[in-house]
Image 1: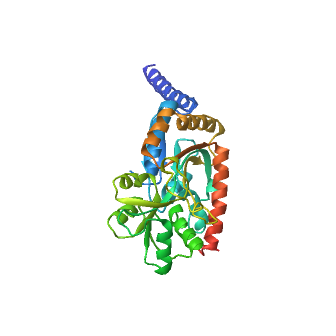
Image 2: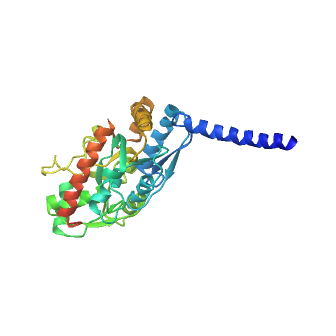
Image 3: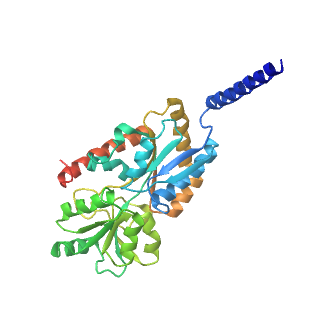
Length: 324
């Protein structure tokens, strides 16, 4: 009888553990830690803004959210990790436009298709890309800068945070529009593109404006051109304002999940993200950082932007000879 009781006790214990596990699974999303993958290194504009959103989402979803930096290959390393993750809503992506357009530029190399493999959950901000030079550089305007590059092809070196980025594509667009010729110096890590200019190793950088603001205010850099108009820096012209027929491209930051997450999970995440982006504290923190344009778009709105971006960059890549 004693053995039977012990065996029965074991059975009861096993059943209890099984019941606890099934109860956990039955709890509404989220019931455990969420990873927010940022495919850029710490301290970059993507990282800074992503962490602000993560902090607010913690409060709204009432769960722990851990930021995981996975930089490399123009944001494609971290993005691919999310695409291949479990489709349960516990691994999300906060990424810039480079992660989206990489496949359009190199479809045979980038392992994922952003349209087929990523589920847009909401757009956060636009990040204008600027052309900046050292404060004591001889060029006071973009026209002077461009004219020098025409007269001295390849003389002006421009650093960027990677070849598969809006920054690099914008330099190529500038060459097409103006007839100038630059030497493109892409870096694997964005911060190195900035230090290259500060150290005098290049003559200019094509980079998101936000991380450059301290250097502009401290009179170490001067900005000649922006891809998108900024109300706080209205004196910086766009290329269209200077008389050219096309605009430069502008990166955007959005939140994604791997395609295939449950609809009930999406219905929880989407309004939470919208609430976080519209929160006055979030807006204040991001506005304080500067250099970005807060412009929430719904999943459908972000999906349309992604489709248009892929179409635009595919055409640019063919035109520039980057792909057939």
